[in-house]
Length: 393
Image 1 (tube, one colour):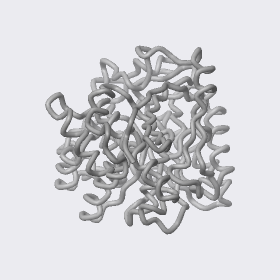
Image 2 (image 1 turned 180 degrees about the vertical axis):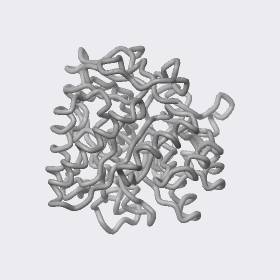
Image 3 (image 1 turned 30 degrees about the horizontal axis):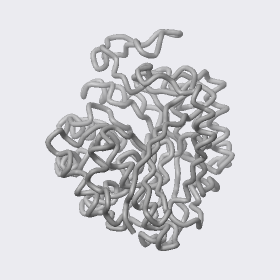
């Protein structure tokens, strides 16, 4: 079996409501979802959800190779782009191709990837994550009731801009999940997407901890700030979670070595091999891992095979347009299917028909860091634009 081609597509995730975080919002709920398809001479194809920046350069490292040599090909892709740097979107391209190769390998073996990797249980515990910073109270409650109807009893809220508003919103979600769980206390997390300084983080979380026993606070300071994460961890009761925007073991290693992270995260976009390596590094330090992503299907399969998986992010309950995934959500967990590979299939006609929904590549959203992030003095006022709020220093 040999790799013969690589195709790229872009579909859309239609949330049907505003989605975003402290950095910005997609007001219409339309988010671009790039797709990579790897072709072979046997007719088997693999699918990866992720960028295709510098796709030709990355593909040159694997063209003509046996796709089943996945980890070796992963390192070939890294070496091919090391001078220009394999971080950011290029690392995402490598991750998308890597996921597609694992898809092919498992299909060739006639097994779902979770079983090929050594998993025993197809259930992967999940927590709700509604990208909910722009929702009204009624909208927030409705969204988390839908998660609760699938048995989910843990939730992560986006916040970090106004401590009083976050306290109120955490209360609303706690009440929804408590009612659904017949009085059982839910797990609550807060994700602020790198919007604070160290001192802001400690003050803000300490205030929330007067009312809540937060499971973790996510990305409280800049992703590379080892000393900052450690300082925050010492100053609050909640665990510190981070890592979704780190690319490569070399970026995770300093945080783990310094004891600056309690829950090690990786994003689905970085691929299966990256997750497996980060999970092994975390396991060596007795730390749990938690996958992040809108449709983290590759990492869900991988998570079923590692001993230190804690819980995986569940964002939209529906996949992107033209994407079908062999899994369900029930009793608070992803339930992976028996289809060979990832169980991920794409309908290119549906994707093409939805082309008019694609937002512009330069449109605003949470991927653009606000000018004053980390340099705000006052709490956000009601009705103020989420892209330019300020918080207590």
